[in-house]
Image (cartoon, rainbow over all chains, first blue to last red; front, side, top):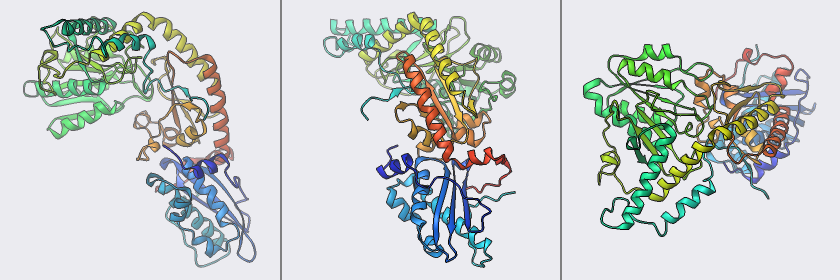
Length: 140
Length: 404
């Protein structure tokens, strides 16, 4: 399979790899996908008191397109408010990385990861507008 | 990329050996006659070359040249053997076939086609090491079973089935036994004078011959009858019409002759390289060998690198030409059906790489491979949330993953 230059670039130099303390008050964690499907993404956002995403980290198990999609998303969410971050659409991710049709699910997963991370943050802060995407794995 | 990737995909195809190519070339230019032309020397020369090659192929597998039918390759041979025998014997013997779940698509899909024609097929489970349990096979044989088809050597995991025992069982039950030997020729000793196999599919390009040519062995004693798939001039005793591609046939014959003379020494060298590769790779944690190590051709190493996805690993080792067991590279997101049939879990099936070593592989290439794979796995595990969770002592099985 031929990958776009942008996918290769993110794969070779992934941005913001790592983790924040998932129990920290200012951190929202979204983990989506499943090992059985061949991809699991974990996106974490660090949110300021003003509700702005100051930093983001990810780790992804999956194909190059999945790694690139999550790496890209960590760059895009930084500096955005939670509601702005939720406006990021999978189609924009797919377009930016020139994903072929069979890899569109990677961009959908990345969008889901943002939603899951925001939902996790909001649930820590007692917000009523939690919006849990369907792909969130449930810890025991 | 400045240099060619290191080729470790000999199970997919092999380069034509230069000695083979040299034999083929005159049959494209000066010696271009149609082997079926009986009325002039052009035809006679071509026919002679075809018959010499038939003998070379027969000799490698302990068969009589009259038992060799030229085809376009192992896929066609599998089709001709299975459809040909099933259709010929349907009325007299029955309409049930048995084949393991780990067969090549050209066998599985042929069986599917026969199901559409009203045949019933039992897809047999294999053991976790990839081998067939003889008792389970015996239990699956019914009075109306017409044919059993198994691989000699599996293309993904390289395991060698006990074809002699399976053949003996089939003979005892009066069932035709077909063997797909595409990955076996030139790698394991095949002696059809002693082994009760009725039909055997062969390919040239897996054994340093050209693509587009193969053969089907059709036993004469006891005689096995087939219905032809391709009709026309009645070539190959009516079993496979179509002008014989003399140059391809000459290539297959020469490739098989070389295989016969060099197999023993070559296997020993390749086994040494394979063991060196496995020793190097297995120093990493959470690395698993897929398929039995002993009942296995020396050329194959199929390894799962746990918590690393196969396609991303391939991206990280672009300097290597290997193949991933994860079919994520094709349109489907299904992991390898062969590894699934071994009972490997999804993570392991998604993280497998097949290394296949061959005639032109060097020790330096193996050492480079170990270094490249070790680096790529380490890098991807740093990126893997699964690896991090396992490191923290979290049992991945305890997490309720949502399918998507």
